[in-house]
Image (tube, rainbow, N blue to C red; front, side):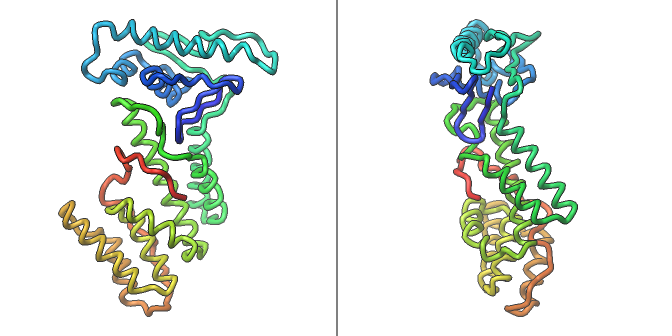
Amino acid sequence: MDIAVLGPLAVRENGISVTPTAPKPRQVLALLALHADEVVPVASLVEELWGGQAPRSARTTLQTYVLQLREMIAAALVHDPQGTAPRIAKDVLVTAPGGYVLHTSGGTSDVREFERLAGVGYRAMDAGDFPRAARELSTALALWNGSALADVQAGPQLEMQIRRLEETWLCALDQRIEADLRLGRHRELLAELTVLVSRYRTHENLHGQFMLALHRSGRRSEALDVYQRLRQTLVRELGLEPSAGLRRLQRSILMAGPEQPLDAPAAPAAPAVPPGPGAERLSRVG
């Protein structure tokens, strides 16, 4: 089974889509796909579908949705080009004690591949291998095709998972930009960072990276303007001053000559607020 959730939901068995069009069965499949090869408790599925207002028939209705998914899986299993040992739908979408499991059986998962590649990239960053870090993190980010589960109506469980995935995307993006800065690609980053800081208006790491890229491109006054705009936004919206790390970066730019490169870190250690786009479900850049 091949699973894609980093964009529109797409689940395929033998190359045939088993993704339903009805909203609630899609929710069930999305939650099972996010936790592929793990038991998803019935209680979690019920909460996802109905929140805190589950009807008395909730478990029976859930069983109906599972049956619908199994019917689609069964139709796809008929078309096994490899002629492997026959499986039935209940072997793929399994009833387990207290819940259900969606077995991938050696298939693919874009989330798992993203996490694997990002992990390689992070380790390369730690080792100072910036070319490999930039390459691996770029490959990981390329797996995204828009917002996670962009076409799924999300309840409490999926919303939580979507926020988690968005955060992992932003962390990988942050590190890829850092690797590119270390490689002297500051001019190439300017257009991308211009868009990102307009979307994440209180994200200090991105603003710090933008300031550094501008300064290294000979645009010192614009780098200082970025700091002032961020400070105004933080004070107005959050009642916060920029972090010590960002203030140090600003002072370094002020003290350096217009053409003098900085060796200072590209950004402070952490953003002022959690940076996930949440309900906006923004399209990806980079």
